[in-house]
Image (cartoon, rainbow, N blue to C red; front, side, top):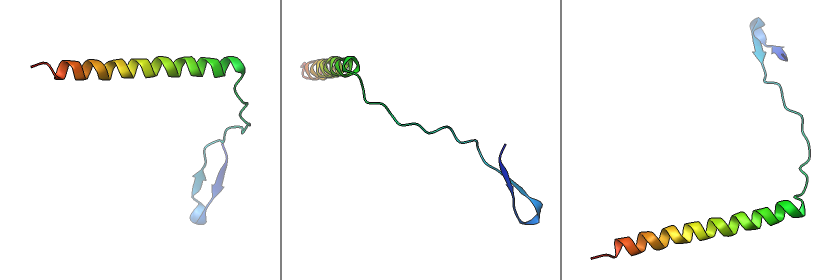
Length: 59
């Protein structure tokens, strides 16, 4: 483990750093899946809001 020695003989340990890499752009299939998941999430949230309003307006 990498460490440095400070004044007075104290050791200062550092965490091991992960390897750095560049991100790859999403493929066409991943882009399509993101769009599908976004549409499904939007429909789900919209339907939950609709149900909440319709239940709260019952007198």
